Amino acid sequence: MNLNDEERCGFLVKAEMKKVWYIQMSILREVLAICERHNLRIFADGGTLIGAIRHKGYIPWDDDIDMGMPREDYDRFCEIAPKELPAPYKIYSIMTESHYEERFIKVVDSSTKAIPIGGKKSADDAIGIFVDIFPYDLMPNTPRHVARLVRKVRRKQTLLKIALRVLNVMPRWLYDRMRVDRKIFKEYENLIRSFAADSNRYRTKVALHLREFLYDRRWLENIKWVDFEDIKIPIPEGYDDILTLNYGDYMTPKQVPSGHAVCRYEIPSDRIPAIDKAE
Image (spheres, rainbow, N blue to C red):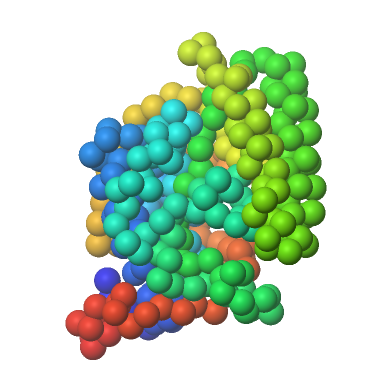
């Protein structure tokens, strides 16, 4: 990957962001290798999926990589990846980290830091550069059963948020002893899994939030490989239905904020190849 400043679609991608992309792509290669070894389904999601279709790479103003996995593959990945990811890559989840609040995992380059500008600057508050992976859960077929699931999940999410808020103001020694967030999170995930059935027609990202569209599970069953920067990545064969449902005319570029905090990135010099820096 060329790490110099580059104009794409009339937007200047700075060299500093190119370095972040380079680290994310390195993480993605490791993730895809594990999935290939264990025959796990994974596919580009969100802005990464748009980028793959429209730009054959990143959306020029995007700053992250999003991937999705069916719940059954996601659970296996969460079990396998910690044993197979080489240093400095690691899984971040509520079950593995302190003060982590997302209900999905991040695969992180722990040698780097992404510090929100205006936020706290301590090492404990700075997560490294990452790739998001979202589980796609099976959903009931009828509105009544979907509503029932949403009510139950919302209650668990509320409990989890309260627990996290309380835990985050505790001293470290007490925080480490309590960790009720992990107990609630296990109950939350088991609740979502309990609604899965072979007859279910839909999948969605419950772990992201409860305002996601329901996708016909057939859209996500099969994948194909497409160009993304200097590699190929998997996308769902039903990408057009997915993107049209979410974005409408997704082929017309619209520069919008990413929705993520603006960060200051710290990347060790040995994580970026000297040959790229010299270009």
